Image (tube, rainbow, N blue to C red; front, side, top):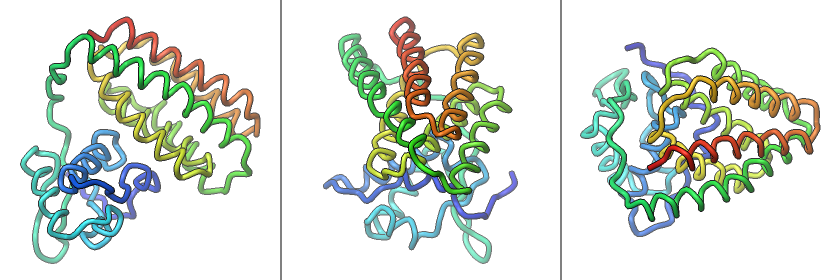
Length: 244
């Protein structure tokens, strides 16, 4: 596996946030694992330096090392020592079986996350379309859209999809709104892992993705919000029909 050593994705700041919890170890594992699950850190990517990660997460290096050790035990990363060493993301293992949640718990989670997503993501798209985006922001949007359209394997597609949604959220200009979108996407993708990869839905999603990005680039907040809401509603309908 080739190792990529360039700077991490600009989206990494949406999923790696200062830990504000007594469960510092668990929170580090959750955030780093989520960055890998969503494809922000991809197979072959070298994790940022220990100093950088500890500062991003606002934890001690000892706690960070324990969290990375847990990721190694789960097969998500490997670590090598010496010159050129570091911690590298591994190819994803086979998806684990979904958590054993009761039907009532699933229904409650599904309702909560789809209502929340229907508010924050259309709002983020509208906010992005209201701004004069910088060249790097526009480039990230277009590159993320191209990644989705050029990806066909289910697991890779869902990660590319997550990166596009995070790029849209980042373009909103609000770090707090973008972080909220990132947290919501993690929950949505845990639910999506419970349903099959449906090609007709992917075709519709690709059209909606193009519509949202174009509306943002055209500085049309109403269109960006409307298409994103349609997209979120379509995903919610699939989840309501297929999650058991």
